[in-house]
Image (cartoon, rainbow, N blue to C red; front, side):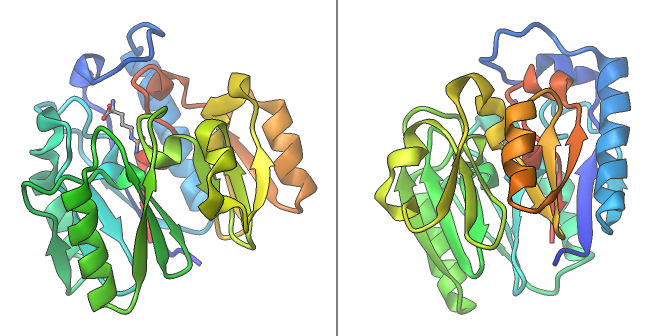
Length: 253
Ligand code: CIR
């Protein structure tokens, strides 16, 4: 079960965020409304949410998931592979330290963005993406092992982050699309296949028995409801324009 979440409001600078989506620029006022509904959804799932102020200097800083990994035993500040995002780590540190006595850190030349990390119990899958490199994954696994957890790397080539195409819903249920459907390491899970056309909804998030699903993907909603979960749809279309999904907008722990 999760108790807490940390989020950060987007700044007006979000229009300058990194994006390959070609969906146009986000509308800031609508992004703020969507963000508030996202925070409400986290609260509905029972989380106590720390809502951080916008940091205009960093256009992608609302995507807090990428800058820290929160485990039950320690927090790990990452070192984003995207140079324009590295400074976001300093801005999240105090909020992380407010919850953790033990805070570790990934150091250059190791790079990790935690959108590339999927937690399954005490094991952490780490995608080797354009943002997370071998050395970053090596450091991350060494830290996890120090605290009696484990990690393994996942080769990937199609998506921005590992969790762009994967969402673990607990109870052995794994939502997946694209290249992840055929990865040997995921065959032991009950794979819920997401069509390419609905791939954005593979980034669905389990929180205390409820699954947050991005709005507009009825097939995904049905498949997840069939497994017995309660579904809460959240409209994050303004963030999709910046390649950001549901999970990216919070740290949950
Ligand atoms: C970026 O490209 O870094 C941001 N525009 C989107 C980050 C999305 N984060 C995530 O998937 N964990």
